[in-house]
Image (tube, rainbow, N blue to C red; front, top):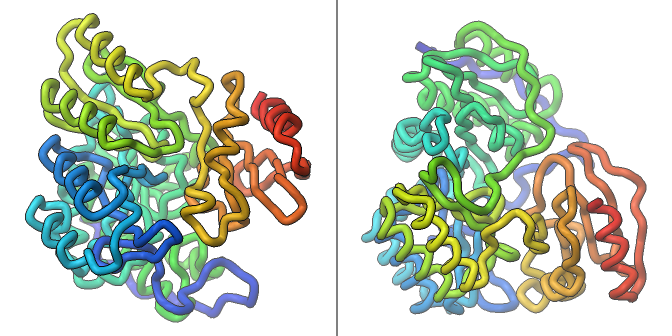
Length: 425
C-alpha cells in the first residue's frame, strides 16, 4: 500500500519562470462563471469524459435554457457552456447538482480527469473502476479541494494515448498492476492495480505540499529541485521504479467504427456542437449502451454495443448527415481553434472562420489556430501552431517542448491556407 508521503522542501521560483499562483485560480467552473465577450462561460467537469444519456440531456437543457444553445468540447474532455447570463449561476448549479454533475461544490474545479476513450472496448484494459474511485477520493479529500483547475489526472489503458497529454499524475494499466507517473518523468512506479486511484490521490496531495511555498499550479511549474524531491517522496512510498518514457505524441481514436463494432467515434469540427447534433448523439447513445465518452481531442465515442456492422454504419451515416466527422479522411480531421473573435476580447481575429477557410487536404499533423499567444486549448505532442500576431499569422512546427523557427504570413488568405497545408504535410 502506498503510504502517506512526506513533505518536500520547496524553494521559490525565479522571475519569468513557469506559471505561479498569483491572484488565485482563474480557471472557469460552474460555480464561478467566467466573463467573455459573448456572455458568461461555465466549464462543466466531466471526469473521464463519461456521460450517461440522461446527464447529456441535462447539459443540453442547460445550454438551451441559460446559454447560446451550443455545447463546446474542451481539450480535457469537459463541456463549456457559453453566452450565459451573468446572474444564472445559482440556477445552473442547482440543475447540475440535481443531475449528479456537481457532486462537491468544494471540488468542482479539481475534478480534472482524462481517460483513454476506447478503454475496455477493443480488447484494452477497462479503467472505469479507476475513474469512479479516483473521482470519489478527490471529492472526499479536503486537501484536494486546493488543486487548481489546471491540475490534471490521466487514466491510460496502456495504449499511451492520454499518457502523452502531459498530465500531472498518470495511472497506466499494466496487467494486474499499474504504473504511476509524476509529471513528465520517464521513471514510473509500479503499484497494485487496486491501489492505483489512492496512489494517484496521495501523489496529488504530495504535490500540494511541495507547491505550498513555490506557488506552482502544476508539477511542471515546480522548481527543479522541488520536483525532484517530490519524485523521491513518491519513490520512497511506492513500488519498484520502471523506465517508461512518456509518449511524445498522442494518437486519438479515429472517427468511425471500433471493435466488432463495439463502438463508433466521431470528431466535432472545432469542438462546437449544435443542439441538434448533441441531441442526435444522445439519442444514439440511448439506443446503444446509454453512454457517451467525450475525448480530449474534441471527439465523442459512443460505446454501444451496436450488434451488427450495418447498425454501426447506419448510426455513422446519420451522424455524418448532421455535420460530424465520421471518417479519418475528412478535411476537418485534426483541425482545432480557440474560440477567437468575437467570443474572446483578447483574440486578434475570428480564427474559427479562418481555420474553416483554410481547410484543405488531410494533413499528417494536427493544426491549431489561436487568436493570441495564450493558445487556449492547444494540443500536446507534435502539431502545427498558427498564432495571430500584430504582424500576421505566425506558423511553427511544435515538437513537445521545442519548436522550429516560425514563418509569418501577412493578410493573404490563399497564402495562409497554402502555408498551413504545407506545414501539416
